[in-house]
Amino acid sequence: MTDKTVAAAKAPPGKRLVIKDAGRGSVPGLELRITPDQSKTWSIRYYREADGERRRFKLGKYPEMGLEKARTECLEALRAIRAGGDPAHARELRKGADTFKALAIQD
Image (cartoon, rainbow, N blue to C red; front, top):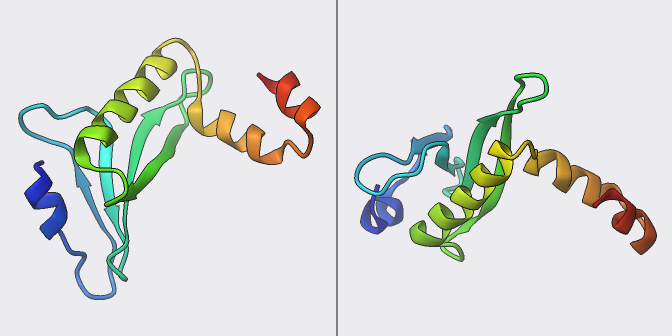
């Protein structure tokens, strides 16, 4: 995957397209998801250690987040996953925290 291929990628009419990072410098699990309206989002696919459930964690939108930044963010998420973390679950908990105290207790 290169910056040029990311910029040029388009989903087929009425369909979603998922492009996995491949080639030189690629990061396993990184994907670019393109919706039928051509919105592009970076995400990582991984398996949660606790139960083997396949999870997806959104990293950010293209072009605000370019390929190199997406790869860096993906590597950081992979490090957290290998250490037993679950970034998607952690984000769900943060979204559910309605007070500062609740947020502080969850971390």
